[in-house]
Image 1 (cartoon, rainbow, N blue to C red):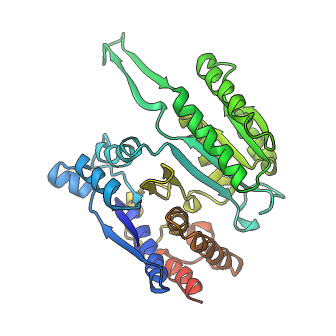
Image 2 (spheres, rainbow, N blue to C red; image 1 turned 60 degrees about the vertical axis):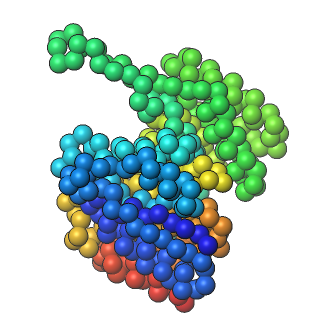
Image 3 (cartoon, one colour; image 1 turned 90 degrees about the vertical axis):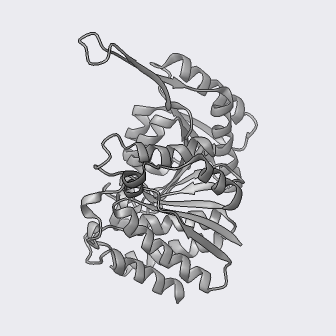
Length: 349
């Protein structure tokens, strides 16, 4: 029995989560032992009670659930987005979800904005270090709101943290028979952080002589992703650069509405989310693209032991695209609910 904690969150997170649950219902009806429970953490709960996501609930997730599905969080009624940070970053740090796994896989040639590039050209994965770097929250202000104000944001990189994400990238490449791993940093300007990443990449890579090691500075990597995406199999990088690289990758495959992701601690409770944000102004209007949420369900099922359903979900989405049945944000006519219904129909058949 796979047990899933579902947090629909805010805005269109609620809309796309409804479609994700439809897909899980189809899969459960096929005989797969799935069980899920919804939790109402989000802006409404925070504004009403002051509760974001208690530590006790994170312990509950760790002890009693195989995975967490998060729709999206963020609401302008909470200007500092404290609830969103406590929910998403709280889970990332407290569950030690050090792997951010973002597939960059083009599912239909028509979706790629780069002239002449096809599905065979855009098919790689990015592993972003997910708990350190500039997003570790180390820093502060001096003389705030004065002409002499100083803001300091410190990038924290440990040997353990760098090594385990690079090792994960090489292990993924080995398991999936992928010939190259590319690492990216900015060691020509960020000398100390870059030195740690460079040395660790070389040392870990020496244990995988069958896998070619490549390197690009981050600015050059982004240019290469646009110029020649077919050269990449696996990319690994730090937290902030990974944030940028993965969003660029989403655009290569058709936009954020198709971007699935996993925040993973291998073998332990992990969190899966579409990464398009909550977009509150579009909530409840039947216009949000649920494909990212549906593909995220596939990633989650692969993580909890049902990789065949990850493949089946992707095939259903590909079929929809190839038959011209696409959501409105991709130039089609389907709303949120109709898109979810169509994918479910294809899964059932």
